[in-house]
Length: 241
Image (cartoon, rainbow, N blue to C red; front, side, top):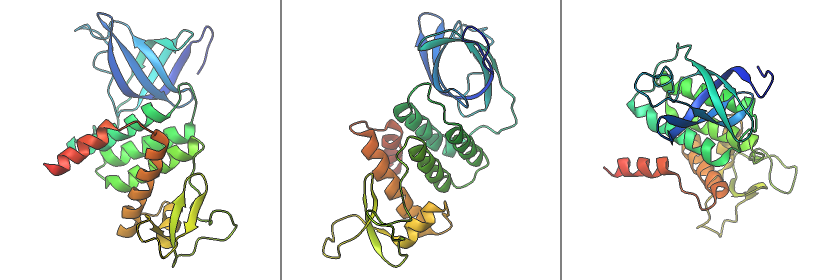
């Protein structure tokens, strides 16, 4: 709820990242339901007896109050309602991956309630020990849609023809599926069946999971440009080990 002088009270939010600020404070990057990504200074949060110190937890639903104008606001209060299990070791990396995507792709103070719900749902699924791949694909697709890059998946690019389950398609950025030329064997393609399942958020088949991962990775890297994800590099290093 917004009040006077830039005051916001009781805003559902998640901590994405924090780093030291001056001698005793932190700058907190938070993702809020109604105000999007916002930067907050948590004054005195690094002091040993700070009430804020133990509450600035990533991957947990929080309620935040803040005030101020400009790009950096002041955190006034934080409340942890509890009720959601902490992410266990195996689920931490997918959580950090989602946080990094939000930090790199989501503009500040751009509200996306649907994306907030998708993020919260993915965290609940990870905390409950559900398979992470389907949750990540749904989150990635919602993120792209909310940023205006929503991938059209059920119609062929340049026409109103529905994607055919039996065909194979290349994917053109900003346009959608294109019928693959059978002679272009080196071009990455996706089955129509998998594209239609991804459009429905149905990841019950292994083919859809595998092709959904390839497609989302390709799309996200396109919009990241030259940026490289630290969480993805860590995941690859762990796989090598």
